[in-house]
Amino acid sequence: MKKTIVENVYNWYRQTIRNSKYRWLIVLGTLLYLVGPVDISPDVFPIVGWIDDTVVATLLVTEVSQMLLEARKNNKEKQSNSAPNTVDVEAVSSN
Image (cartoon, rainbow, N blue to C red; front, side):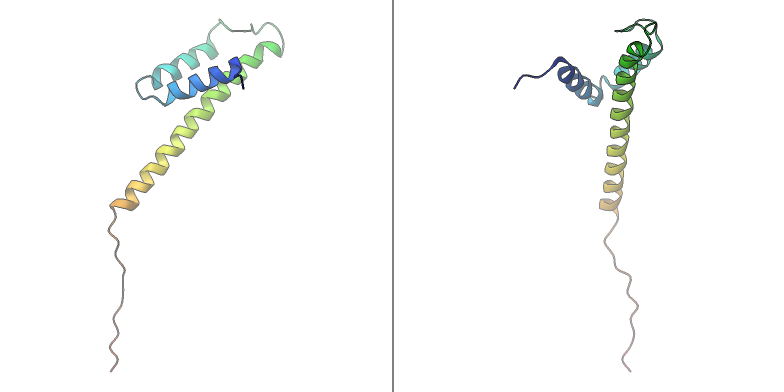
């Protein structure tokens, strides 16, 4: 099964943004692409010009939110693993 160019770009983007060494460069580059005048399809063409911006913004938001959710999950796991497993019991005498 052949991968399309869109799948290849998406997989590259996802792998690169998850690499801590390049993460902020990719985020900054994506933001610059969104606000900059250079586009794959210029914004002067109604609707068609906005599609590339929408796709890039969706990729950025999806990946950053996924990273934040994973970081939050890992943080909760670390907190639950570091807490001692104790049970509070009140003792009652049988007399």
